[in-house]
Length: 123
Image: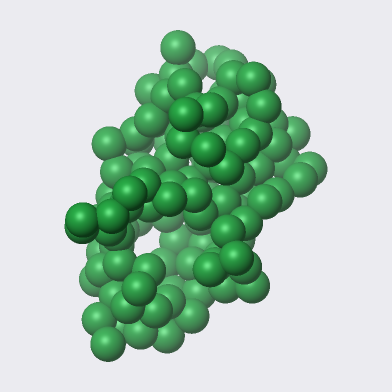
C-alpha cells in the first residue's frame, strides 16, 4: 500500500510558477507509475501528467504541454510537478496518484490517491 501527501500549492499570479511535491510512504514507490490530476469546482477530475516507474517516459495533457514538467526522485520517494506560465484556468485542486499496473490518463487506472493541494492562479 502507498500513502501519498501533496504539498506546494498556493496562490500565484498569472504567469507565475509553482512546484508541487508528492511524498510517498513505503518502500515500493519505484514500482508505481505516477500521475497528477486536477479538479476545478463543478468539473470532473482531469488528467494533467504521468510518468513511468523508472521516470524514463512522460505523458502530458495538451492543456499543460510545454508549461508543466513531471518528474520523480525514487531515492526520495517523491513525485514533482513544476508548473510554469500559470493561467487562471489552471486553478484547481491537484492530486497525485499511483498506478500499480501501467501508466494511464484515466483516473480509474490509479490505485492510490493523495488528498490534494489547492492551486489558485489570479488574473
